[in-house]
Length: 495
Image 1 (cartoon, one colour):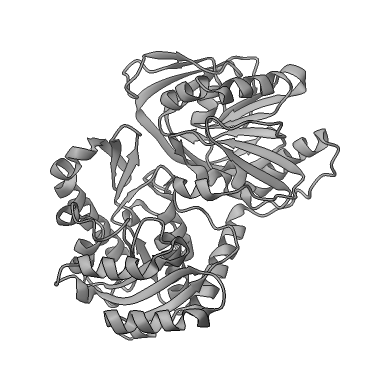
Image 2 (cartoon, one colour; image 1 turned 120 degrees about the horizontal axis):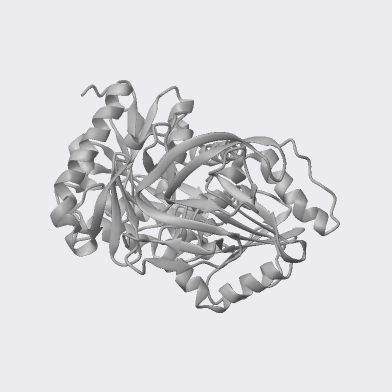
């Protein structure tokens, strides 16, 4: 395989250290310097997914890194994706296609060799397509989980295989940054330690010179240069995984619209809500079962990896009853994918794909019947919306099951399979769609928000808004600007 530039790899002292965003920043920076970065994460565990142009499923974080690199996302960038089901079981996806399920205790026994084969195939595909590109690899979790190191698919095994130069990222915001770094290095095997070529301190608050002594201590004690100290950035970057949502305090505290989002245990594709996080007039509140609904201007029920299980959770907590009461009192409710399925009257699972009953009552807010089947629908779509206005929209489908609607419902798009809406009790609107990324479309999003604003007597917002990818690209530039200012990559790039 041709390899003109040495691969770089971003490792972290823990999950949530900032590996995904630092990898994206590195991709954007290399692109600015005239290189073609090739983002790659051998194995990712996430229910936040993207569908590429060929209908392959991959992690959203690798899609974001592809955009940072100026490339169209493809599943070769994330050849192994594990989608947790919440019962120590994950769906296994290799090179974009679902190939089975695995229990945690059997995963490395049954799936290690096929997983390594998929990783090598993904690498080969990328390097054949971009022979002059530089691989920019992202690790997973910590590279020194001693009980798993011998079966690690995506950290140091990959670094050794590719002879990559590794950057170790530590999050100072969490505290204990010196122990994070020294402990991680101490647990590396002798053959692995030389792979670490630089340290990176992430999310530092305050004046950087206050860390100068700490920087000198780290370099003296470890013999590894500190490449930089990344400051805390106030911009609301996309969360790296659903756990990050727990730290969200709600955007737009002085906003004009209050929108509640139900965060159920098997939440998936939470990146659908990123465009609303970026709207200055919107306060987005993430609610988990047990939280009070309040009186929001709208409620969004997002996607779920385990729709029937999450529906059971919702129906058996106060939040489920509050949602039905809110809708019946004239509230606006919008369901996305699994969230739309829950809004229906009946969900049928004859093959027990989710392991429970063969049929379950929905929330009964829309006359929809959903039937689950083994084959997934995975494709990008570009269609004309009919509600809340006629406008062109694009997004992607990623769902297991098909839905039929009562003729009383109105079509959300010009096609009869992507979504429906109706005016319910007291003038409220209940709507749902299978189209992930619908809110990314600026004119559609603003038409929907203006419908909420009219109910409150607020002036309408301008409709002519670009696709959310423009805002996302600005965030990536902001991230790369800071990375370029505070991190010195010259020692690595000269190699």
